Image 1 (tube, rainbow, N blue to C red):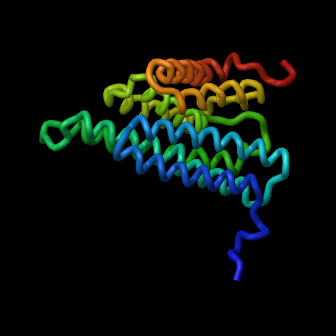
Image 2: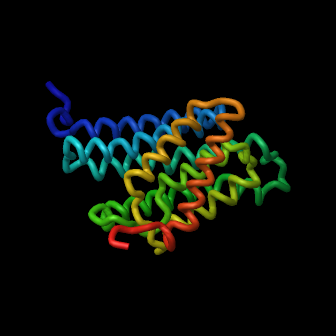
Length: 230
């Protein structure tokens, strides 16, 4: 007896569920090596972009939109949140009774990040899939900022934990972000890939460039990113 998905899911869906698998691998890696987890998260972001390209080339299925949001919860909600929580656990003495505020922040802010990611993805699936802009910071962008921050050498808990809170809040704002144009998404993908595979100063340089691009779009995109017809 064939699995239920045979004949119902397409190539783009296969890339999407691969993204979900990468999310799990990133979550596991976060418990061992923050840099490795950050690289896997960025690889998942590339897969997230590729499934859209494949869908446009060979077509999509009715399940595609739902699978995409579910995969993004794993890769860009749970995985980066666990990465931040693990970094905080490694750097802060959370067993000290005086460390209650740090413990609450190191667990509570990542938990809030996951909650806001789920809400944002649900709203996106319901309202934004047919338009070329979306409200709130994209979960992929938020996860990319956190991963690039780690790889660029700024992976201190004092940076990551507050940044997680800021990104969690921004995901559910009404700030409108236009979709990236194809050429800009390609540039971002190339820099992401270089940050993943490069080591040493080269890797840190590409991670810094990725962080610069991601933060630039995060801060300036709503007001200055060019839209069709402008």
